[in-house]
Length: 268
Length: 312
Image 1: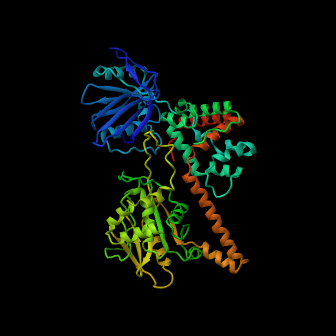
Image 2: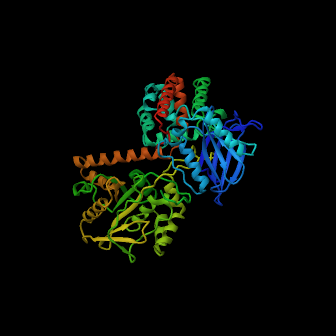
Image 3: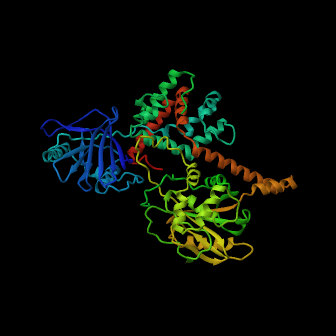
């Protein structure tokens, strides 16, 4: 399968029976929006615990739009609305994510759309929603639900990352470690094997300040924010849950360091 | 941003003199690439002899319809080597090969054979031969980070990045030529003196080109391709072991090679084990809690300001 054009962590909301209420579900998942070879759009919700694709839709371009319902009690709530049928899918994506909405709608209009992530979040839809009262929220939800017929309303409650590795692994935070001879030496085996001269504590400082290393940490942060890194972290001797977020990763490594004592960690 | 999504297995690389020089070394070519900060004759004098210039630029976001760079005349009968760029990510290597095809220099067997074979073809076919060339692609990809973290069953959406556009300037058959893989033909500019310095003409032409872009419309860089000075410096030092000027230049060159080797090692490395080890070391040293608390606060502030983490 080709790589998704847009992916973001999200939970789902389901309609409560025949009522106009939607309830959030506890399962953590991720939405994957992928352009297929024939110019269609694949909309999938993958359960991050079981890795199962619990939702798998094939959508025609322009058939759907992804829009914010309004502020709801469970974080930002969005709906994938079908213009050509009665189907409604509730996706709540959170935060950063005026960009997500923009990019998702871009793909839904045209499968070959290329997302852009470079600009800071625009204020448009969140500003509009800011004034909504709870009543407005319920009214809009009711409007959408009464038009709907499908039993699976999926809402996504995206969890934005609480911490970034790139803010933890700063040269300033790491300097005390490099000043400790024994700790510094224990890190030498993890440096690139083909450095031009034998490593010293100064080398460690240089490496963590380098653009290449910092780009790698940012890449890992990005990857961890999808919550899909179970396999990768298992390779480091960590439990699968360590791949759920940056915070989970940090906690798991800390536990591993505590329990392992002076034992060297698995290298890749 | 280009609409060309087909990377055909060519990874995006950095445009850095150390990357280019390492690529040339891998191809068995005794040339190096240096970044230029100016094109005035004194600045260039230290680097002479220069075999080619590489002008690289990209449009600043929002100014993609700024025009510039026209000048000279297309030469459909260009007697030298010119190949079209057919894969975006290969642009840097393509520029290097376009230069190599017109410079009289030693080179490794693979690239030599490929150039000889490609010489018989038209520019478009030459371009396709080059991007289909396995050894060339491997040499190119060797200098980008391994995809351990971002790919590998993750299906993480690829971040598209704007690639720099590369243009080569060098003398062929008495004229200054511009080789741009995205143009249909080589472009002939002014005549160059048959013996002596062609770089003055090139400097004028390139500076005139830069002046055609609206201010702030492009980010650009200039590089010089020249024979590796180390062997000659070493030979000269043998004859004059205490020559201060030679010693200083030698030290400078060696420091530069060390830096390039360091940076290239970092480019090729999988940093995940080190990241893992650093978090563990922070935990062992007792500094992790404070670091995480500080990081969480930074994240809160960033969110409050409405900023996105995904900046690069």
